[in-house]
Image 1 (spheres, rainbow, N blue to C red):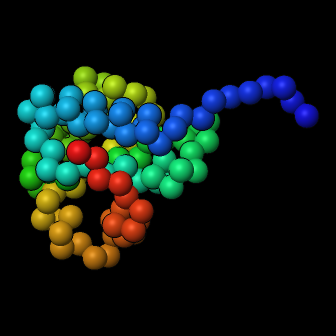
Image 2 (image 1 turned 90 degrees about the horizontal axis):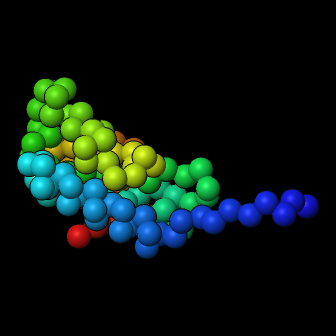
Length: 113
């Protein structure tokens, strides 16, 4: 048995990180309508190697412009390297019923305000 210990970040810590990330985006001109934490942190099953899965919903993402769609990945906004953003439009969020990720978010996602 190993004495090596690691501390897994708590769900509440991930929520704080996501709140700051969303604030960074909003302050940078990317108006986020809704943000959801999903995946292992939403289920309280995160491990040392878990990323922070975040769904971002914004009208600005209703585009094919790669410069806009890549903004959530910018180090300028990402306050934690573990953040794994998925950006979708508000329209897609409300009408898409075939996305496995949206199904997961609707089932287990925690809305971040």
